[in-house]
Image 1 (cartoon, rainbow, N blue to C red):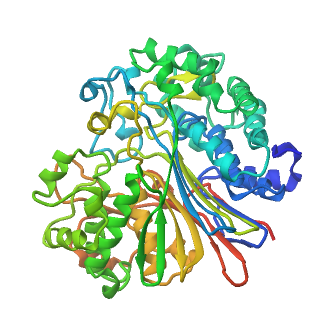
Image 2: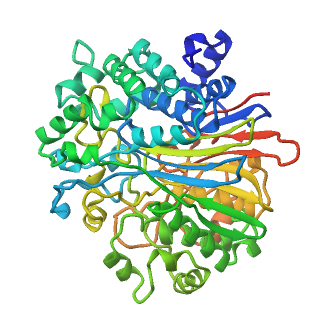
Image 3: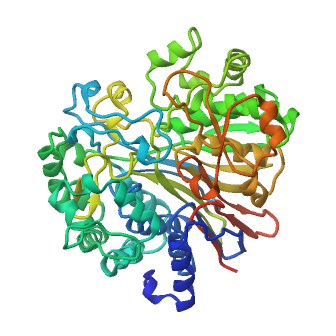
Length: 570
């Protein structure tokens, strides 16, 4: 048996290729009882995950096989086999919730992290404007945990043979596919960087030296061979084997300090979930070292302290909108700030993780925010993709994975088809604050919702506006009683911008036509309305699957403005 698309019914291949290639294919909810999968981007990957479920795979098999396919389909631009992941899992038999962090490990020999080259444009509006020039440096690379994390999750919760998870990804890399408008845009934006190194140039430039464009046939044979080796030998091939040696050589050639010891020492972290109770719901998020969970718990507590529920939904209440913007902005920009930077923003306020998850802290923080303009939120490049799956037995898995940098990074290093990225180019202070050779706090936000003790929803969030979107989606479900479909289509605030990058009142962004004009005007804030097709690099993307506790019917949703897809088995 195989998960490869060549073995699917032809109608399915055509349908999901059509979704994959379209910018706005439409994302209807999917319903069934035999399993469900949803993705935010690269909807073809959802069908890969569905095939894993059809062949008796678990929810973990579904999200991992889908993620492998997503990376191939994206050319390693925003997600990578040497990237990072966060996973939260519900085991239907035991009722146990577990979480896995496979984030970046810092480099043992990097003893001056604050001097690592690189930065982003804090006033960037759109992907091209967020990229700043400068000399590329291998010091910006860190040890990615994606493949170790995938293997660890499969060992614990997988049912299919490990190698089978790679079937679709290998075939897509070997046989190739037609370049979509989105991938063509990425290549065009980074064409100079992609031409810098011979191995990367051989992947993304054609024989005539021109970059691949929309409609071209794009193959990645070197990547296909790498994936075959991992399927056969396990993740050791990338952490202690031949690939590891070539990775270290490539990074050191560009001035990096990574060694084979760094790769060999990498281990993902299993931890108990972080939780919060609210109005009969239990919300579970990945545990340490996932700082994204801390940020989200604090944001939800702030929304409670701000009384947003009592004001009515922010699409109908100008004051509710203002308070929501403050709650989201307060912690969304703190992901990579040092303790000193946090203390400058909130002098005298305890900013430890233990404090930030308490309602007392939220009340004190809200008392400071209430009479202030929204705090600056600098987009710090959390480009990623997500997959959520629930299998027929009720096991739930929610995954987020990312290269955590701007499309391939300034270095654009490729090793046997695998993109390396430059995540340390904008996280210098956080790298400096993290013990060398250990895992960096993970910024991802994924989770489970239990209602009256029963598993209800598995969800995941991605994109530069992931914190805004996750906060709003959870409030839609918990405080405003929306169905998944209603929550997916509800008006939302996008990532705001600060035009000059300085501490000042933000310009909030929305999708044109989603909010009543009187609500926007009544807020007293400045807004920029974006057409749906231009919202991609301002929004967060939230996907979810809900399992009815009585009927066991599954409902899966995917965002409205992407080429993701929700799919379910009858």
